[in-house]
Length: 171
Image 1 (cartoon, helix red, strand yellow):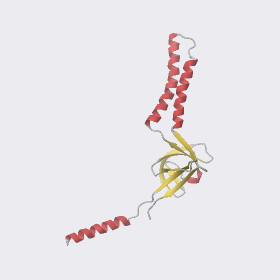
Image 2 (cartoon, rainbow, N blue to C red; image 1 turned 30 degrees about the vertical axis):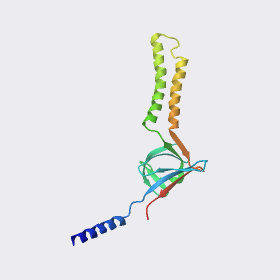
Image 3 (cartoon, rainbow, N blue to C red; image 1 turned 180 degrees about the horizontal axis):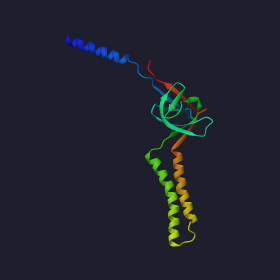
Image 4 (cartoon, helix red, strand yellow; image 1 turned 135 degrees about the horizontal axis):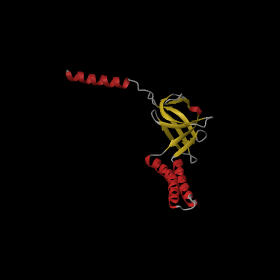
């Protein structure tokens, strides 16, 4: 008799757990169409970091997505942003190493020029700032800047990139 109640209780608890509706599962999809005909979908979920620029604006906005609606999304400390007002999305593909190396190279370029100039000043060499040291320092700083630029990819919304909200709520 006791085992029948166990199975009834188990069946009832499973039925109740499946009947409880789950919250809406939405994400922002950036569909990138390549010239070869392939499509790559980049997904942004709630609590993901997003970097974007609005139409008729030069400012890049960055923040964590706190809410996704049917036609808009909200990032922290901002008003809701409509999907159709987004001009471009910036994808940051950098990690610790790819952030540290460009910063090191840019600082090393400036430090190289300063250290060489200080050395020439102490030794009484003329000219204090040498052309070769400036070229080398600028080359280090420029290579760091280029590496930093390659870590980010800008996708302009238009013919080849589409931004939309996808709802995958079951039922």
